[in-house]
Length: 428
Image (cartoon, rainbow, N blue to C red):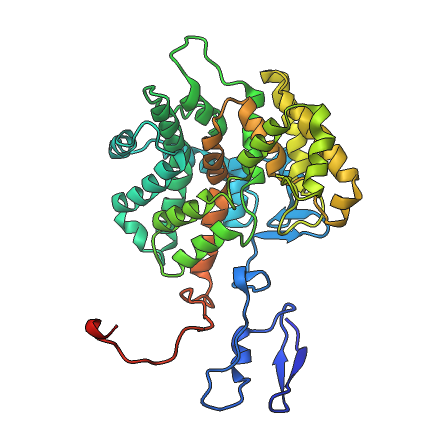
């Protein structure tokens, strides 16, 4: 923390104000002293979409978009993707440090212990139409879980919070798998806690009673890495929703239902599905150059390129590109990967895209991998939610423990009519 200040001069009055600077920010409430008339409310900032407003202090995730850096609790995403597991990374994100072997074994056992869901949730999932979207089913199930665990509303108790974290991380894959099996008309598979987190999930999706069934370790590891890459991304739309709902001290199930609903929006969680549609539209490597020209002319959109935060190559995209080739060695080649590689080569060497800092993001290759692993497109965002769950829970935990946080209550600039009298119906 520094003692530096910034001086603001109000040209309307000629008065100057010295505002303290901490962490390269000024407190928005300090602007309230700037006013022409003492009876005024005072100055506010106007920032649609919160593009340059810090709503919290956080120790979880660091991003430098210009340099293409992503770190969880200080650890580079590249190292975690290479050496860690999803559950170990989840522990790191939520509790701040990498666990030792005993702590990790205990943590893994506890999460796996909570993979079974109450039969009431099974009944709920089976009550949905056969064509219900898996994200709608997931949102509903999370909200339903809040009714099953009323003690979760005691958010000030760390032990209660820890219990809900275990329940959510354990049950999310089961709920997602039940939704998937319901959609395709197959009976559900109950969890197998002998398997790893992602192997168990793939088992619940695919097992059909084969005596020699085994989850391929390459696919389980690939999914593990994909979940790590999505585990947190600081104050994005869904995380902000998790914090906003949590600021009212709602239970974590309700808060996560809201965060999942935000992720459901096509401008947030559905980008990898849009990439698949684009690659299918291109159809062949030979059509890439022509498609790129249409993009430059404004006739088409380049999906999976560019990011609101990253103005360089998304570090997650480099990792996913390598994972894609590992998956294809198991599943067989996917013609879309050839189109994707050709598209990346053309776009990243074209001055038009370089000037605009449009580089591949995490969504560019992830959808191709999911498709190769036989996930239907409407499951892609469910997988995103599974990966993002530790981040949401860590951010919620941090919010609850932060004494500076209050209930979220943004201001507005009122542009409506002034006071006017009610007009009776017969005079309108």
